[in-house]
Image 1 (cartoon, rainbow, N blue to C red):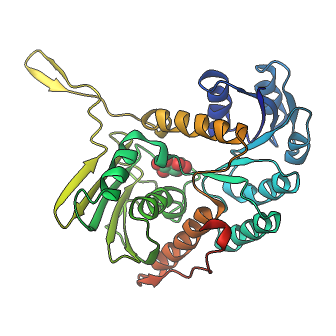
Image 2: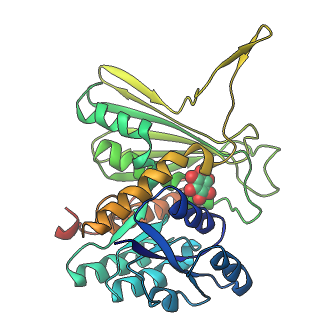
Length: 335
Ligand code: ISE
């Protein structure tokens, strides 16, 4: 039958997921929505036939017809929503970050371990981007030899008013942390952060851009330019350099127009556009896995590891020192 989904958080990301579930994913429908903003959540529910509107995430997860939960609330609200989904043994797709901090992530990992089975998938959706998938296939096949570097560029056109210097690492670079762990099959062991004088286009006080350096357990080095007020668009690039070659994704030339003696193309302005297909594929595969009684993709452990690296990154940025990553022992459930 049709999978009933409760969507927790109906802000920009949550609303995008509600639309996506109705539009691109067969076999699923939104049966409950929750958001602290009562007016907003009623407005979103009104557009969904038969969905109930709640301000309490627990009530939404307990609503009739709910088979799975999608968490798209702000990071600090994730832990409570995750624990209540686990308490009801509901499969859950949780937008990144799993939790903003490693301690919270470990509490979630331990709760899932007590259940003895995985129910959580974390929304590191680049793993579902066709270009990232191709790059992983190439690296797994040894196509460029042992990877030595990943040169990453993570650019946003402009940052929201609530964005802080720490969020460049905890909310943006966290994608490269997961991508590096997934592409290389390794852990991140140390983080260093060096920053240029902030761009004049960045809001007063925001340390933007930053250069974040990740060292990995397999001896590779990952550098990430994160620039959230680049002005020209949303651009995510990655070049893998190995012992016998290199491979680059994210050039984004979907179409090159030649006219009037000029050539050019367009640059996406937002991550929901650049990664639209990745979000669609992520959701389709999650719904299919849940319907088949499986949990796959980025796990709560991946969410914990990313939070541990983020925490080291925040320390590195504030101290200017290379900071080792402290990781707990990886439980058998996640091996
Ligand atoms: C946002 O949360 C994302 O997930 C985007 O992919 C990232 O580019 C942006 O900087 C984050 O704030």
